Image 1 (tube, rainbow, N blue to C red):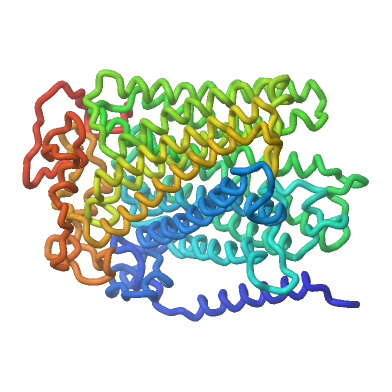
Image 2: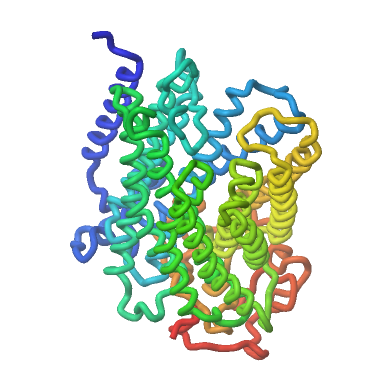
Length: 638
């Protein structure tokens, strides 16, 4: 029997995975690179495992660490790389779509870019960037020493790079290897590899195997988050005063636990159809519709897996820059739980045009309309939190407000798609693309940037440049609305999605969408320059309350890390100053005054353009019309 290239490639990749496992199993003294606050497994840490030495520096530190903060940073850098990759793919596609004909590259390459863009944004950027926030911050906020299972936490991360290599293996310069062109939904019979097309290529098999590893990573991380929140909380952290970000991470982890194993099972069946002649998704077997049911049972909860922690970040930040506690904390928690449950009952609204029984379609339409209610509850709670507040338009606050406006547009456009007659007309048009990009780019990404800017002083011990931060916000906001509103109009005009060429009457709107994409790209260049330059040369943070949260009784536990003696400075992996901050290398930023006070504002003035409040050097004004609350109720709890 002849051995095909798929079997050879699968054997090689399996050998590589086994070799990596054996290498990791030979590493010794992993406890030396555990968390400075403790390391080990839940409820059982030995004296030898705590403070047994100093973290190694350089590459060894990052390859062997089980410290939740280090792993959070690794997740962040990995997700940033995937965001860049997906963004470049989007820019290439939008550049191709400036003209109706396929001018820059063949349609097959366009399809490959389309596939990797969707997979990278949803699975390789969205889920890992939220895991970055969760790993770094959640143990600090709830008073845990570390994640419940630090070593599993490390393994969950290192599965991601290995899976990513397999997902993108088709782009490697290997003779006979082609990238997958199935789109991120991977619908059979296209993805089954039958017929005269190129989808029988081993590149699709490698992509499916890589997605298995990333799904396993997400599932392991979800189990870790659930156990950490249930068993590792400080005694003072109860369910009544648990912060809203931790609530959303808990619900998200529960969704992952139910959704991702099903996706893995569906992909196993698809691999068997491709390689062993089974007929799970064949027309004369289970049928292509079976894949759609299994895929979307994962796919629609995945939307909320991405947006719920983003909602948690916004719910955490809005009160801190409004001078008010979160309005309706309990209802925000209840709506989070409701979304987590209802998200598993709406998957077939992606299949209204597939010939489903009309009675089933009606039931899914009803649940889809119902899930808009808890989302609306959150929106009104956020608006009410802002109402009559003492608002400080810092960069994190601007991204939160941008999130809110984009979320409303994404939600309203989604209500129309919940209606069966409207959806049948707009299905598989650019309207759908514009709708979910308002959620994911306008929602998830904006919330992520709000969190990055808010916790940047905590991550690095330095300040970013506020003017660049605000330039980043405005370029991204303008670009997002130009691009995706143009797509909504294209959908109304009947422009189908996933096409590398189109009719000339759609050219103007496509060019507008491409112009917006260039605005978004410019905004991300502002961010990258700001982050890198500030990481190394930003003005050092001199207080454990850089945002002046104590005057609103909204100071949270993670900021105490700024006062703790850390073993390694994050910026250089080495020496710390006596107060626990990175040693100044003698080359401070020339515009430190600007970084300190925003656009000319004094650091203690929160009436307008202030970026930070240096409570050590300038003091804080405790007067005003702010609404105070108890420390335990800083998130609005009862």
